[in-house]
Image (tube, rainbow, N blue to C red; front, side, top):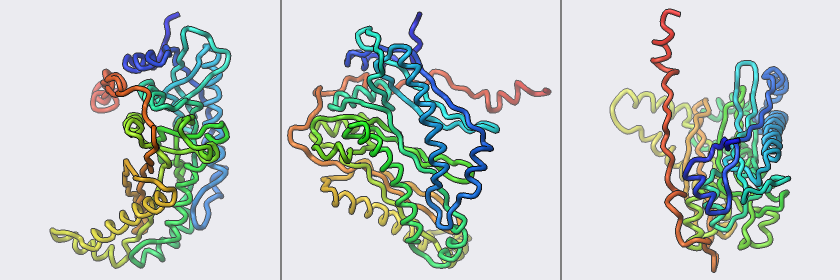
Amino acid sequence: MAVMTGLSGNEIYCMRLKGLSPGDIVIGNSVYSIGVVGNVGSGLKTLMGGEVDQITSLIRDGREQSYTRMVNEAERRGGVGITGVSNELVQQTGNIEFLSIGSCVHQDGAKAEKLGFSTSADGQELYCQMDAGFRPVKFVFGNVAYSIGVGGGVMGSLRGMARGEVKEFSEVFNSTRHLALTRIAQEAANLGANAVVGIRTNIIPFHGMQEMLMLGTASWHPSLPPEASRFPITSDLTNEEMWNLINIGYMPLRLLLGVSIYSVGVVGGISASLKGLVRGEISELTSLIYEARENAIYRLSSEAEAIGADDVVGIKTYVYHLGNNMIEFMAVGTAVKKLEGLTTLSPQLPPQAVMRDKITLVNIADGVMARNLNAGK
């Protein structure tokens, strides 16, 4: 039968360079009732906010079940690996579907009895990982379901009277955000890997709470020190970025997160509202937002210094409104360090490893056209 693969032409080319050929798309899913989730989560919100353990476990179980079913299908098809693994949470009417999708790859036409690896990287990204010296082991994820908490409204209202950082909330959110990172690294360590690369982070709304999800590939690199087997390195650099850094001798050390929760305060809110009536800068908010960003980035700097990093690269900042005049500022980056003798297997990447595939189907039927097509029905 013809191979039905999700790999593009560029991905197939890159996989061929590593001795791999395309296989079929593989899928695994698991459907849960929203009623079950609602009953579990209804009484679990804490006064201070933070992780809701039972919901974290429930979501993790659903994700793992769909992943296992996908792997079983890949093994039945004789795949040596699965590339481009996604692990999605699809909220349907009355149900939640956990969905894992990837594409098998084969090696020299041989049929494997057991899956050799799985990875969140697509074919192009996997080429970059492998050429940078990483051997993929397994698709891994770390998640945490969390709530601002019923006390968040009370404390937020009280703290919202004053302008500045709400340190209690900063500590709660900082520790909660790091849980997902700790868990994905621990899963890699349990597998005997010494790195988690290509990490992608998603924050997903979920029934009055949120899930922070990190997806990546547990991998092994021979140049990492022995202690990395107990505390794997983590990186959210794209695989192309990582290849470029390793090519010039820099190894990722750790994905860093810095979180600070700030209140604009009642006075600041009133003042900003009044100034908003006229044209010009709202200096109170300008200085507060600047201070909050600097605080979040300072946390990255402190953590990088503590682990002996040379630089922190790829820093991105995010702002989230929490209500009660409070705002979360989060800075994310990857700490790196220069290692002697470190380089890539190839002197340069092939163009096919960095060329982006064009979208060849655009569906606008959900918009105006759909309404026109269904007019009068």
